[in-house]
Length: 581
Image 1 (cartoon, rainbow, N blue to C red):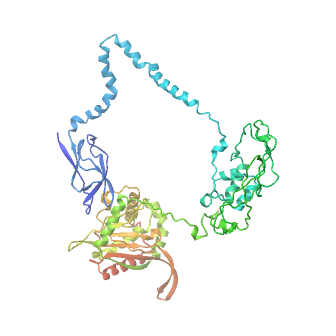
Image 2 (spheres, one colour):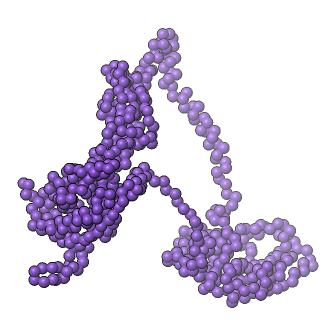
Image 3 (cartoon, rainbow, N blue to C red):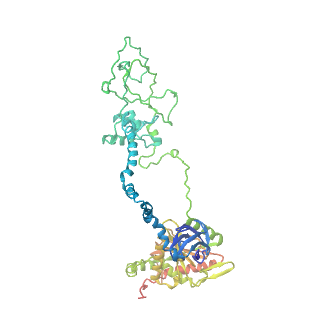
């Protein structure tokens, strides 16, 4: 038996460790050669680790979320594939297919047991009867409690909400539309503190006319046999009255009347002030709940408490509606009416966001950042691209954007300023001979990744366009490989994609400079010529360069930035891009 070790592969020049995201195999699983065993993540990209051998996994040394150094052993594989490869699939499938066949010889030894064995297996009534009986027993007791009708359906639809405030406008609409108090209490309110607004009651009237709202019925009271006959009162309920004397002659018992035998109840809306309030108290800033008292026939004998008749002239409908939100926007006009909840939401950063945050902080702690700014007239670039982009895409099968045009100019200028294409290790400056330009790319998740275009100075505009579009598409679809984000020597970020005019980017370590290009805007500019100065509409763009002041001084940084701007401005408007044919 040979045991092979699966190690964490080398993922890039500056990558020293990786985090395990997921194991696709477990101990005892069979793995083929080059089959994915686990997923890992670095500070730049996620990747899959394939198996380097064929066999059975015997040991897993690290778990999910463990940080593993490059070159460390993460699993062991038993590689005696000659004897085990063909047996492992049979071990899983043989018991399922051949198990009934294997048991037949022991049953068939007694020939008299053969006819008894077949009916016991193939007889379906024996299997279904015990299942059907409990189902029938369960359904029988559930049939009786289902048809319950002790209360009307309309009473179960909504329960009345007591102690609600109704504005005079709402009460007038309810009175004119014949909406009783019980119905009004069941209307859900959308106003402040659940108050019923004008819109709520009008919507309820419209729905009731359309038959969308069930009619709310008043409870039917069945009087006892000794209830005295109702006698209408000749005075309003709101007037102070004395308790009437009981009748001289006894009242005969009556049959339980139906709802049609009661006199028609007329609702008259009045407003009363609760007795627990003092008449001297003013209510300009308070909401007073005016109960509604109906004139109804009262049976004798009856005791009616004394009710004071109050006027509602003190109630200001405009003031009462002031604290309610606007029916159109839902916003308040009074700052004192807003509600501060103090609610917060905690969102844990994902793995990539944690890595980005760590690298940005480390870069600021490592490199003293300096940022220089300039502007460039990119009118020639804009006009050339507009002229050739359709034919370019038709001939090359890829779109022409500004990014490959910028990279071509930057790569040419870097050769003049090699100090911006280096890194620092201790006290040693490492000059990079390869010009590998990274381009910051935004991901759909909101995170950022920097794929690298290797040897950018060796590619023409067609090669750069294919490299830029290919890496950007792979980044957005999570198809980048570890080598696609490694070995960068200089970085370009286009903050103008999101409308920014300029930015102060942070240097990705161990590089020493990063260039940000802003949005292209048309502006009136002074154009100098041999015939004099003129004013014209030009396409202008701001450039900003952040650089490590430990290596790059202000003179070198500013000179490099100015040279890049001049390269943008001197773009050939008659450039031949298909000269390679």
